[in-house]
Amino acid sequence: MMKITQRLLGASVISGLSLLGVQNAHALTGPQSIELDGGPLGTLALSGGADGLFYYQTGTSGSGKSLLGDRDTGANLGSAEIRLSKTSGVVQFDIQIAVLGGTSALGSAPGRAGINFYITGPVKLATITIAPPGSPITLTAGHVGSLEGYEDFVDYNNANIFQSDLWNVENSNSRGVSLNYNQGPVAATVTFGDGWDTGVFNFLQALGSYTFDSHNSLSIYYGGNLGRTGLNALTYGTNSGIRNTVANYGANYINSQMLGAYYQYSAGNLSLVPEVQYVYAKPDHQLGIQKFTSNLGALVIADYAFGNSPYSLGGYAEYFDSIGTATHSADTWFIAPGAEGVGLQLTPTWQYKNLFARISGGYIHLINSGTPAAGYGDSGHGKDVFQTALEGGLLF
Image (cartoon, rainbow, N blue to C red):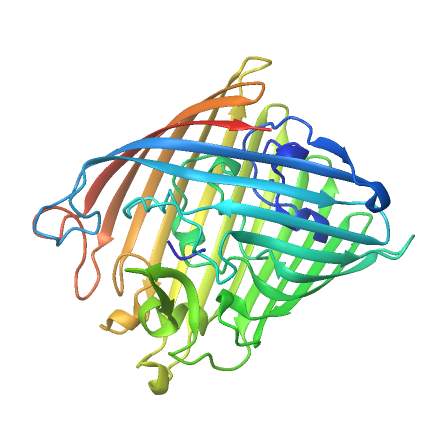
């Protein structure tokens, strides 16, 4: 997992970007947050959620060659988080404590949820926002949310359990400062910080959105390294209890330029979100990036609610292609250098008030297994895999 809206999720489990005037992916309808009397702080909002899942996948192998490992079945904690926020007044704040990482992009092995994905440990988000009265401009600082992509890190905020290739190559939360503008149909945020939680402050992100009407909006995003982040810098996640460095995580992810856009359309009970994304890294021999390398992803997410019933159906279709990649592990974006493939996923969902359950079934086919080839099964070169997960959880 490298990243590390639809039917709007209620205030109970909204994205940390909401204070920035930015909307992010949500699939379930959450209850209203719990209001608390914060005394001199004013009214506070408490919310959260948690889910667990059982999964089954084909294409595993005891030989260690398959990208899915050797576990056909398993049970994981998907995500769990609790949030305390203040969204009124001149001084506002947002704090989210989370256990993350129990799901993955379709075609890769589900992970183990934990509290050590971020440098900040269980603190997923911790921001202070200055919001001058009557001004469309606000300023946010702290461990801020990512502006890249439509899908959310927390699996139950998405229409499907497994995320896409596009999500897999995106930056997640990091330390920085954000300038936000929100007036009328226009919302925009620019963030400068240490993208990928590296502690090297040279990463710029931007997101601009225009709402045409209540059914249509367009968002364009950018994320890019303004300099070079060295191989010894720390970044997301751990390996055998040791914090990952840029060298073992992938220098091309952190030292890259990304441009993408998504369009949100809703009509009645139907929501459609097409998204396209392109990310590339220039040659940099000091970082082990020997040649130009890039990844193109295209995605269409759909979500349909069946009237006033507790049932809905989510799904997506995706295409990904690594373009111009060198035959070197440092140039891998998804699956393998030069990998190309398509994916499909369907997710029937049941929700009753605070409780929800759903099942996802997803299929990946590799048009090109890359060079050197990677894939599934005993040979590690299989091109087809099916994954499914049954998930249940609670929102409050």
